Structure formats: C-alpha cells, structure tokens
Length: 383
Ligand SMILES: Cc1ncc(COP(=O)(O)O)c(C=O)c1O
Image (cartoon, rainbow, N blue to C red; front, top):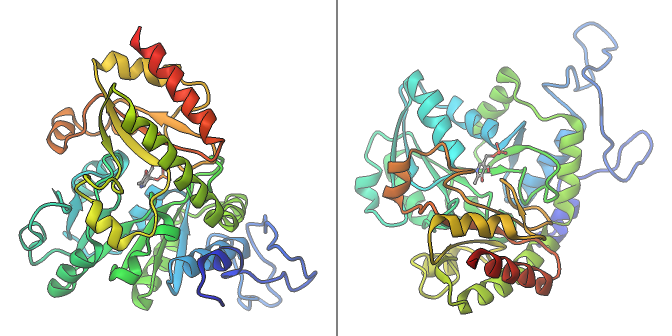
C-alpha cells in the first residue's frame, strides 16, 4: 500500500467482496450469521461483534492514521466513552480545558460520579510537568480545540506522558489525518467524531478510535463488543464512502477557509479571529510544525453586543445556523448557546469563550458565494 494519503483514502483496508467480486464492500445488513455447525462459525458470529462493512471503514481509517487498528463506535462520544472504559477504576485523567462541550459533560456528569478523576488544564500554555502530575493515567487532548482553535504540541505532551507512564489520546476531529497524524507524533490513541469531516456529508453520526498498541486495540475491541455502542452497517458504509473523497474535500475546505479568513481579517467589524495559521496566533509555531494544513474551521468575535452575533447567525443564507461541522455545506453557530451550552458560564469565561464567539465551518461551495453571504449577513446584523 502506498504511503501517500490520497491513495490510502481510497484503497486502505478495502478489498473486493469475495463471492461476487463487488468492487465496493456491500452493506451487510444482517444481525447474525449462519453457523455450519454449532459454535463453528465463518469468522462472523453476530453483528455487534463482527461486520464486514464496519471492518472496511476501520481498515481505511487505520490506514489513514498510520495505525494498526481502528475500532468504530456509534458516535464520537461513544468512542470517547470506550477509551475511558479501558481505564482502571479511580483513574486520573487530565483534559485540555477547551474541548467539545459534550466531552466535558460526559467526563463530569457520567464518569466523575463513577470515580474517574478529571482535571482540566490549558495544555497549550501551562507547564506540562505541573499540568500532568505523576499518577495520571490518561491525557485527553483536542487539537485544534473546539471552539477556540487552540493548538497543543502533541510531541511535547506525548514525551511527558511517556515519562510518567500515562497514555495520550488525541481528538483529531478538526484536523483529520489529512492534516495531522497524532500517532506519528507519539500519541497512543487518536479519536474522531466521524460525524464531521471523515464522513463529510452531515448525514451520519459516528465515532472511531485508532491505535498502534496491540494491547490497547484488544481492550477497545473488547469494549466495542462488551458494551455494544456499535455503529450500524449503513452508517459505516456511508462514512467509508465519505473517506474516499476526504483528501480532495479537505484541500477545498482549506482553500475556502483561507479566502473567508482574508475577508474577515479585512473587515472593520471583526474584533478577533481564532485561526492557528495566522502568524500572530499563539498556536502558529506549533501548528506549522505538526500540521500540514488546517481546513475550514474559523472562530471569530464581532464588535457589538451579543444580539449582533445572534442576528448575524440568523441572517446568513448559504451558511446554515446549525450545530456540527465538517460537512460539504457551510455551517455556523454560537458555541456558548449551542454546542457548548452545557459548559457552565463561569468555566466558559475562564477559558476565554465569549458568548458572542461565532464558529464557522466553511464548506466547499464557491468561495465568492460564501463571502457574499457573510457580507450580506454583516450588513443585516448592523441594523
Ligand atoms: C471535537 C469533537 N469531538 C467529539 C465530538 C462528539 O462527537 P459526536 O457528536 O459524534 O458524538 C464532537 C461533536 O461535535 C466534536 O466537535
């Protein structure tokens, strides 16, 4: 297999269906498999445990992340859940302070009451020896973060984890393996909400975890079957199909993202922009080192009251005001009242998440049309 990512998007983990030669792995829509003799099966016993359509997706994502294994789940949060379920009781987890609101809610409101101990730190800024004390079992990093687009130095955190025997898991949802491959930088696990760029068409919810560590892969595979948060065959088929165009989509997201960025940067009403590939962004140097591109995620703050940001989001015509990101169509949202509403207001203030922060997921439409749309929304929000 080529080590070039565009080729791997299409061929990694794929094989022709052996009975008919079907070029694409079909949707194996079955819950169980016939056994020729009791307890003697063909390698497929029950669809929670094995499904060839799911395996095609897992093989492709493993190939893209340069992993040996990938294990698919029913959502990004189900994938995160599985990682926590591999930890010992009373485990200590250090998590980046700015992360998807649902991740924080899962940690604080589901796992904390079961005895898992979570602390939050700005791993993009704080001294790692202090932020990640000895005795830590897992470090959970999102980079770039959602929604402030902070960048964490994966290799530096991996080195600290290695020194104290902790595992490092990186949520790579925003960057995708096209632009960043955390396992190559020393992470033990890479996790995705495949709902986003991997699938790319806003029609599926899914999650996936990849690793090069055989013992960890076995633990995750066990949890996948034992806890059972598996994705259905249609969903895995759609995500696998989405992966085939991931490289071309990401290139276009990046191109359009930079066009929108330039327009925002030149607009007098834009008070602040978060985008790590801006030379004055605090994440610039690390992003340049560990990412080969960035994509279409941009967060910014408008001058004026919160009502102006709300009106802006309600006034776009091509950008749809909706949660989620990473689809071919452009979306925008206000994290404080939408995707991150579950993060308490004082915590949002502490991490610098303004109520008026607008998050764009720039799609792959014509960039001039997207800019014209933002421009008319800017005018509409002034009134
Ligand atoms: C960075 C990130 N990680 C994880 C998740 C959770 O994924 P899902 O919604 O597929 O459960 C999201 C969802 O928005 C996300 O943005």
